Image (cartoon, rainbow, N blue to C red; front, side):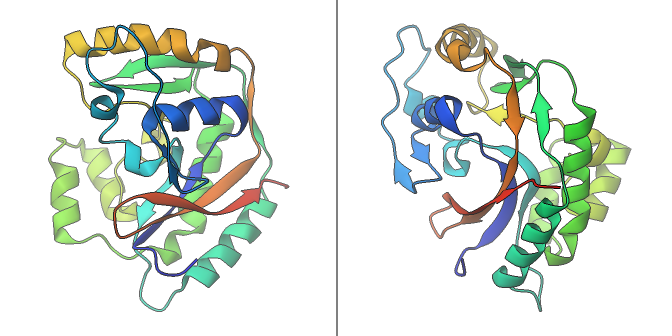
Length: 228
């Protein structure tokens, strides 16, 4: 549990959806092992090139964005707090997942906004924020390159990340930033590839504490059941 550079709380699916996502990205964060991406005809580039940016995070949906531990806290205390928090929260069902382009990248997202999932994410951010060290000036500058709105700037100052609370949009990232032409081709291929895994509702019944190693790869530290 100790020894990781940063920690975060993610939704990490299980079953066939997780297997398909981890194989596609080339990194299984649960097993802590590289995977071999499928050979999918029609892609605009190799799977390795298309997934270079999101690979290190593993197949996941961010809930509490990655953070350095605050001075005076510990990984063990974070684990205990996350365990206690998740024991007080109920599972969330996403009736339909779909594959979409979000700006320049492709992701799997809920077909319709989920108030229950947004509430879970917001509560997680608040509950575990005492463990978050303030972002460095370099981290803040990197976030501000995205031309933040006034509200996003305020959220960055409050929570160390601009896309939380009402700005939260749950997504399972599949590619890095692509040109419009490449995104169109990749979306078409990936929609077909992932379709069998998006046919049934998805129950989010756990959150995962993830740790980032010295190579920038994220690993599963612990999976907590939402048992409230």
